[in-house]
Each structure stands twice: as C-alpha cells, then as structure tokens.
Amino acid sequence: MGGIDLGEELLEVGPGPGLTTDILRHQFQRVTSLEIDPRLATALRHRMQATNVRVLEGDASSLPFRDGSFSGAVAFTMLHHVSSAAMQDRLLAEVCRVLRPGGTFVGSDSLWSRMFEIFHWFDTMVVVDPNTLGDRLKAAGFNEVSIEVGERAFRFAARRPAMSSLKSISPSPEPEVAD
Image 1 (cartoon, rainbow, N blue to C red):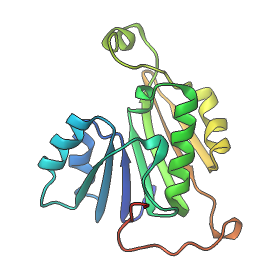
Image 2: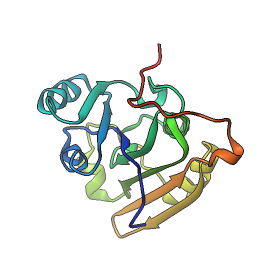
Image 3: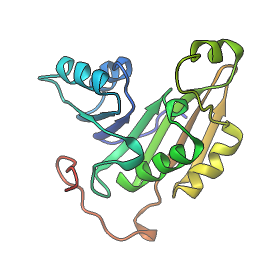
Image 4: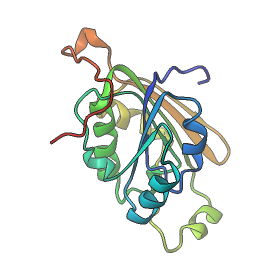
C-alpha cells in the first residue's frame, strides 16, 4: 500500500489527541482534522494554531463539507470508536462524498483481542471486520479497495471513482464548510 498519493488537501477523520496530526502536517500542504469530542477538538485546535492544520469539531457521519472538497482522507485507529456499524457505513459514505473524483481514503484499525477489549472497557468499541470492510467501502461508493490484515491490526485503501463516472467537480483552494 505504500506510495499512495493523497494530494495536497487532506481530511483527517477522528484525530483524537492529534498524534498522527503532528506527522501529517509535515507531509501535506493543508490538513483539515475533524474531531467529534469537544475537549479533544479544542485542545488540538489550540495546539495547531499557526500551522497548516485547521481543526473542526464535528461528526464524521455527517461531514460539514461540500462534495469534492478534499484530495485525500485518512482515518487511523478510530473507526471502532463509531457507535454502530450503520454509523460507520454513514461515515464511509460521507468520506467518499467529500473526496474529489479519484481521491483516496486510507486508514487502519485494530483487530479484536482480549487486551483491546479490556482497554475499551468504558469506551465505545465496535470492532470493524476487515473481511467485510471491502464490501462496505464499495457500498459507500469506493472502488479499487485494498485491505491488508496483520496480527493485531489492518489497513485499507479505497478510491473514489474517477471523473469518467461522475459529474465534474472543480476543486476549491480551501475546503468550504457547507452552509
């Protein structure tokens, strides 16, 4: 899966405390991070002031962006924090919607283990089955789906279909938040 081009306008879904945001901001021209937890979003917004990262508070199952706003999107170890498989599917469809034609969505998540469950004892844990994720990504509108499963985690990549099968969307210099 190495060498995937995510473009210059990246959407980071569910950054939490921003551990990956610290890395992403050095690799992309502009990063928009959307975090549902108000406390985490506020802390990350303050920490990312005067950088190329815009931090917004919001729900990724109802993204506040116009269609085709981003060249790429990432979601690292956060899908299992979404409250149900149906809500995860809404999130996947929303990410597809806000990607430009040909844009790529990559991510990773953990596999179930007893330790993983103990770690999430008082937290949301809806484990994603990598064996069904490919079909779920396709149902959300993606194609060219790739999933690699390791011992404790899996990673995935999926592409929004290119222009030939979609109406023309002109990229904007900065993703606009929908009205």
